[in-house]
Amino acid sequence: MPVVLWISRQSLAVLERSLAVAWPEEGCALLLGGRQGRILHLQRIWPCRNVWRPNWPEMHQPRNPQGETEDLNLDDPHSRSDRFVVDPLELIAAQKYCRNQGTLLLGVAHSHPRGAPQPSAMDQRHAWPESLVWISAIAGPRSQLTERDRGAWWVGGSGRLQPVGIDILQTV
Ligand SMILES: [Zn+2]
Image (cartoon, rainbow, N blue to C red; front, side):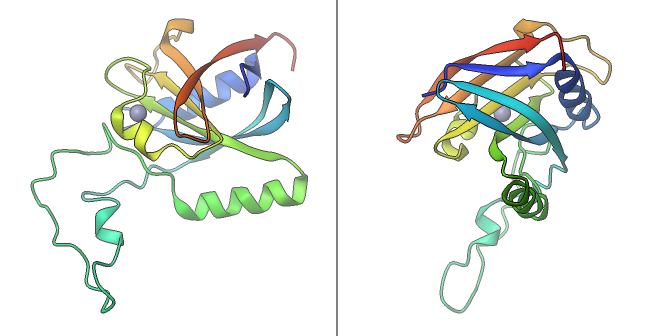
């Protein structure tokens, strides 16, 4: 299980600026790179649109073979300020890129425009097994982030999240 994540200062800036652009909504990005044993090396940031919509994902899952969908819950109290979904087309494009480049899709980053950089119950439920979860707490479009404003976790096969240390490399 990975215990540390390497990211260059430059990639960190790209990641957190791309997440901040979405403020006051949650921003998201795919994280690409390599893995050597217990070290993850984040080498490429793939910014994505947050395409969350009310009733996601229920409204996209047919309830019966006739393809009827769930009734829309118009009272859904959530919005893109507290929910995110990576654009599925971006995900497919990134997976193809990874296959061609021989690199790994390590996981997903997203921002919390309100609150702490801690995984929500929803984040935990929707995390992909064997992947990286990155969260930056971004309180405004031009916030200066410190190490207390970000966190990374590895999702084990059981779905349990284990903290991963973030090691910022000074060189590219
Ligand atoms: Zn979250």
